[in-house]
Length: 318
Image (cartoon, rainbow, N blue to C red):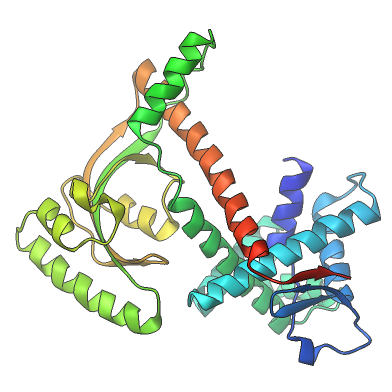
């Protein structure tokens, strides 16, 4: 794991709390303003302490660490604010699960995690707020990534052709479990929309379960870009879809239709059409290329998200 990844991992779990400007005590001091929120020097100190616990003896100067942590705090603050504007939230159950995962990774209990953070001046409530912000951040990033990382067969063909022209030998890649599915999406951008979308998707689900052709229903109702193709998402592997979607797919057998599933995009019903292990050399190579191109698109989508948020927000480092 490289330094940048460590910083991002640490900052994602940072027990840091940004507050409204009116709530900031003068003694804290303001390190930066990000949109409608401020980041205090105390936030940065706590973030640096948390990052140090991840980095161990990594040889990085205090100034460089402070710069990395402050920038990550600014980015997270802007993303969380954008998420809240889009009514993206973190449930208590999601916070509990995230804390359990962090505790397990650190070989302690959740209560032990609370005690560790209390030693650096972070309360249980502040820690849970921070975890909630991290979950919202992940959801916003996932939303940005999933909308822009699909890789078409034409893109894979073009990549392979360029590699052949340049004399580049590509690795075969490893066999991967792949799924092919169709889905119907009813978008939900607010709590009121969520209720209406759930009602609509349950009605569509009844029609699908009654035997009405799934492709026809997708073309008629789905609000996803795949609607024109009957909701077909093509082949995908684990890690390419949001967790709620993947979990639903894992519970299906080919030909089976899921119950309504909620993600940050809205409400879905999913039909698993096929499962395979990409076994031939050509399939493995194409999947390796797909993963590579998808990763490039994910990095670019995240960069574009941050660029747009910075351009549309007031940011000042003091």
